[in-house]
Length: 276
Image 1 (cartoon, rainbow, N blue to C red):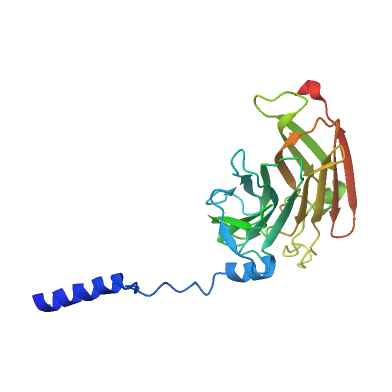
Image 2 (image 1 turned 135 degrees about the horizontal axis):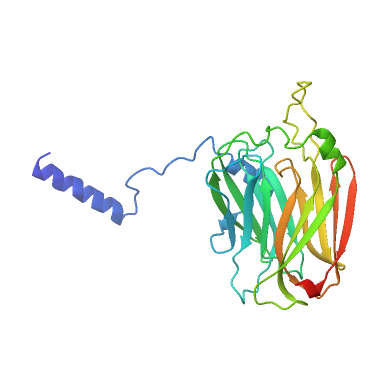
């Protein structure tokens, strides 16, 4: 290129920048990305705001076992922020049923962290969407390399799974620096259930095992709601929910779960402050 043509080219580029013209066309959205369609289907196409300072999602980049992939959802609202997280929706984009779980947070429980285990069927983005009391949705995402989790055979035999059906266990942990009667705590609810995804094949009959899973879980301290979960096929076998909350001084903790066959499981536990 001659010096004259080079100068003309530079001048044209400079004029383009000054006039606000793009130097290159914007990249087209990936036609294979399911997220825009999921925003429409799950959230009625509501606007998604950057949730980097609102909601955190932690998962291993490469899962050791696609059928039990740990996930932690964490509120990042700073102290003094007048807003409150009302609910958190977990979406596994490439799963057959992408809506994995929706968590409703008790108005007075100050739940700040939720951990569970999920199935991952293909390499995928995983989105956490927090709805705040300001009426807006805030989104964060991570990427997980795993495959085959939704069709992986159950870890337990059908007879063993049925014998443990609905059995609930409860654990509670004191948070560092907090007194026994109040303050932030961690608790865990574990439910014996096969959580069949409907995509698992019986190795004897070669037939698919029908979907059968916990679709509702509610947790209270005394009569005050702490956490409620609407679950789907992506929640792993023997659902395990661990969470932080603020104690209101309650003397008992109770839980109720329902599965897709209509079984109702209930249990309650006395809170022993002397062991905290």
